[in-house]
Length: 175
Length: 438
Image 1 (cartoon, chains in turn blue, orange):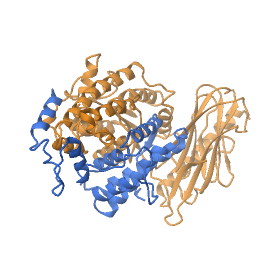
Image 2 (cartoon, helix red, strand yellow; image 1 turned 45 degrees about the vertical axis):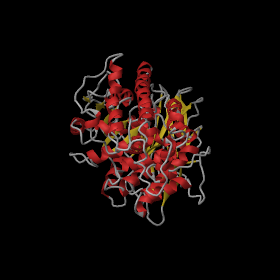
Image 3 (cartoon, chains in turn brown, orange; image 1 turned 90 degrees about the vertical axis):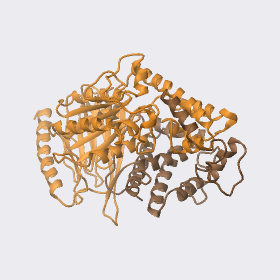
Image 4 (cartoon, chains in turn yellow, blue; image 1 turned 180 degrees about the horizontal axis):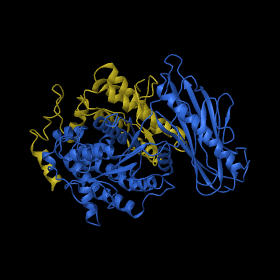
């Protein structure tokens, strides 16, 4: 029932639903199909525009360990250099999670620790909660796992961590 | 002299040295560690990634601080559990993305928002293309039933000690180091937390370990609990068996404030969205339970010292297994030579189960950079036993846990090399770090 109310409200509360009014792109052509409308949201930056290739690592032209599309997303989404650096640090660690050898428990834990350091750094750099560090972390996790292959690889990494424990790191963990 | 008596005397001597060493660590400005007196151990809920559990850990720290009212520094740790079958959710999500002529085909970045039934990206899409709400609703409907199925399966096949050896070894280490233990569990984590709590009670008393349940998926309770009336996941479990009683009413979805992650959770089960959402009254119950448990904890007797890193050995039965540490300068630390140049063997066991415990000093002047080799020996009568060694650092918690089946007795010769622990010192900052090497 709650979900039905939710959906109904979402559908009725938005003026111009289905007409492309929410896309925000003033200089683009009016999209004609729903799929084109979603693409327009990407173009206008309302939702992330991401590489959807089949490889786990994607394109990384500057070899900094972060996919080019994620680097662009970070540059567009987060203000100030320290915040972008924190986001890049975490994105790099999350990217490692997709390719680490899962049978190497020590390596898996080392990647997990790098993710923990990255999130700890995000909590330092986004301490004013604008945006909230929990939201920043989820965005980075989501853009890293934006294809089926990447999402499944990431879940396998999490499965490899089943039964482990880790401590919240102390002090400044920003690189 | 009888070997056992000799070892007891050695242990007593080493203990005295360790206590004096520990005191020095506290007073010296050259300490590389910050010891914690209270452990906040968080057991995460269903379909939670490790990164999301890390975020929960950060939020708990924000709510409950670095230090308890009695002055204990608090260390926050995640005791992670993965939901079996999580990856199957991806298949169903993919099917949903293909609906409406592939409207959202391939957009897997929407997956984690969809698990909570909403989120900023979904909202923007639905604002533009209203029919996308149907895709989300279809997935959330399926997910609600699937989450209940997942929890039901887990209730029928609860976690075992074999699968969670790292958690148990960690708890044992906390007990011998005299830590107060506060266990906080959400959702599925309550099943693992109950097992951990019962294990902790086999090592210490109920005064030193407390459990706080949040949205418990298990009907068995070992502490105070909080459960929302509109928690659809636990309500789904109620339909097929007994669950804990409802403690709080929460607003309907449309009237709820979002959690810190910008999400409301249509299923009413989320930790950040519901139970520690400071915009909801229910969060004050969770907070008061945690604060009350913190205040009630009593430290168990200190049997071992926390160091810059520790090696803890346990095994599964009778026999005498020995922990051997070789320090970077070649010092060999074991039952017959319990004091090294950087560390100490401060707990020795010659009868059964362990633990044995080695710690490396927190004193920057004593702690040697380099590789510490950690090995095991079946000294006597432990053939075929499973021995477990856990390496943990003061800053990162568990760095590694390994188990080995012991061969025939080899006396003082350690036949099982398990870890190389690498201590490095940053030449510029002077900061020490500890990692597992090859």
